[in-house]
Image (cartoon, rainbow, N blue to C red):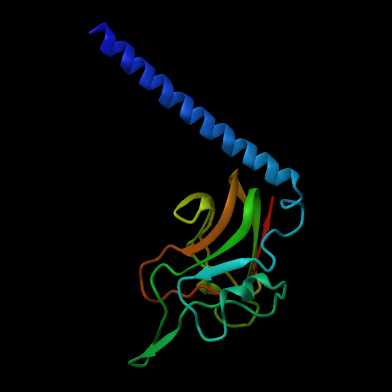
Amino acid sequence: MDKRVLELERKVEKCALKKSVKKLEEEVEDIQSQCNGLCGADNLALQKTCGQSSVNGMFSCEKALDGIKDNFMHTKDGYKNGDYYGEAYPYWWVDLGTNCKVKRIKIYNRTSTCCGERLHDLKITIGKRLSNMKLCARFKGPGVPGQVLDMNCKIPTAARYVKLMIMDRSLYNWLHVAEVEVFA
């Protein structure tokens, strides 16, 4: 019995050590990315790789990362039986290229006179992987054309990805923003 207890204690210690080492490795990675100049004071998202739930013609995800605030990205748009429709839970994301301690995200709503109110129930998440995101901030809305959302993360966190998602399951949702800026 004592031998089994000792064996279990060793396994627990080994597991705890592995967790500690992993946590330390993540902290070192975070510190290195902060020190190597990749996580400076400038907009981290400018001209980075991105994706979105769907594309509406020429309004691809890159439009929100080009530094131009009078164009915009747009998820799908359709017309059926005399009614316009979008999609449930439309989203957009950017890959910053490295882990940076994300503190603030600035979102520019499209500037045209149309459709600013479509920016609503927005959930802004950040993470080291798209499959493991944490809440940064929320915007209830509805937005207005040209509105600028300056969102501070509740808990600044080391992240490589930033994702915007409208948290509404109806098919009458469109995500379209003019620009997204990310700051460490």
